[in-house]
Image (cartoon, rainbow, N blue to C red; front, side):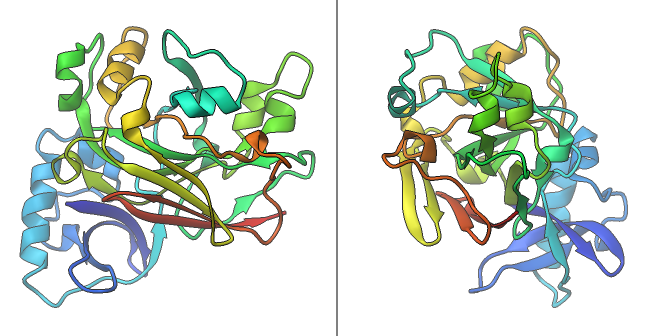
Length: 288
């Protein structure tokens, strides 16, 4: 099942995504079950939220009722945006970094989250903004000290993510401003929708690609992860409680702009597409 957040003329709605036709069609799930909230994060907090969505979606596809509107980030208001650095061996190599023995973790804030077709805004004070295509995990069940063998029980689904990074702040400033380099507004596009775990299957067999103005810049596969999704969940949950709607960026493959010769930085007018197997395409234009 594919779930999205859509801004309609009636307000923000959770919609099921019907991709059986050439164009995606959206079904307002609350029309068929008024108990379904208008936030995916709130829906995931319900014990049977995903099942209610599934039943409503199955009813909806049998009708001609379709919604129109503006796609937002699947989870517009995550409490946590966690990120894993250097999780592909080839990316660690191009960054001249040693292969980590444990997951390298950092975070973003809610201000970074934006949706498909929304603009990535370049700060005037940064001249070296980089792209990073990533698989994003969306947590569906609360957990603390989650065992690796139980980690996938806490995953609601997956989506495409773009970990935009201001390198001249992240690593170019005195003391390295990782926080400010990773958290400018709009620097974490996700979408276009959440694809539930059962539809994705093994998350460690997915092609991850990024195109910049139509040219392929990154082409990896999650089989190249240093730390799998289950390892990441077990690792971070030793320290913090994971909650429904939390998002985890799982790292990027080789091909980022910083690692190229000559280096490539995002600029005003660029178009960036992140495509991951089974998850669709996340497209954003760059302004600034």
